[in-house]
Image 1: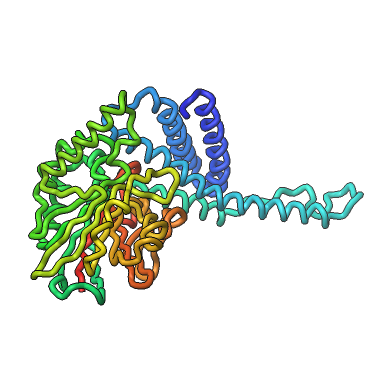
Image 2: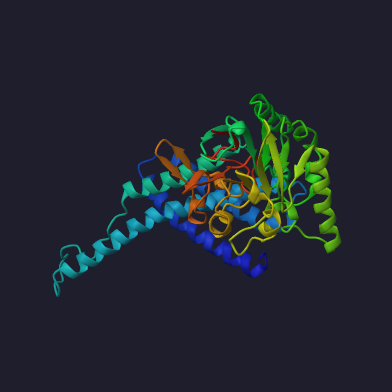
Length: 415
């Protein structure tokens, strides 16, 4: 992936993009004073060259602190994503100019030696579309940088869910769902602790965590174990495993070390007072009545993610309970297996998508690029009598920020 040939190709493509965008910058700065124009040109090429140098040197630098790598990656990657957005508008303008040029050539008088009707004239670049392209790209990059400030800006989402078959004793039960902590990406224990304070202030009856406690390795919990150990509820704190918890994305000298890492992670959850459900179910009792809580390992309908979950092990025996909650990390599990084979699972709780940590959520508008990959990606979904809630994630990974899709604490009230 980081071979010299690959790096050379990327550098050439990046320089071509830079040159293309530079043409638009020249067009929209024509009216500027020469001094300011040179400053704009210098900023463009300075940032471009700095980004390319960072990309080329990245494989050799590889800071020990993964968070620094994440920031550098986000800044460089975001810079070129912003330019690609600008290129879309510039291409529209160039296609327009090409069509106009072609029409001018076809309609021009032939055979004349005079100035003609403009057959040799160039069609000027549209300042409007150039401004739009540069503006869209710059706004996208500004949004990405602004997102760095939002990664600990926890938002409480309140959901009231009504079920006809819910035992009366469980009416009004308050559940808090957390998901995707990704402790290996966190860098501010104080801010993380404030999120835990928000959870405890809700006085939940039950806390459920739906996977991805770490990015890869159990030791990532070193600075956060004590913080999350504070989570408690009268009916307990239960958890399930996510795709990152297995260490599948890290490099291990032996399979034994990888297994030991997962065992250590399970031990940490036990030490925090969490009960990890690994392809099993438990009965929750309230007021002399019971419901089932099922927890499965990660199971995804997407080929690139593992299928460790075993509903065939977790479900048997749960059928006798009138109401069932399933914790399953990946929401694609719902359509692929849960709804089709287990129609009496009343509520499934998932995470995994993070809402891609980038999108728009306004009244009447809910959009994120992740919806091109996941049908259910954030919030509540219903099919018949079954419900799925997808938590937007407590932490973050890759891009060290959030724009529009804030980290979530879900408060669910059963009715």
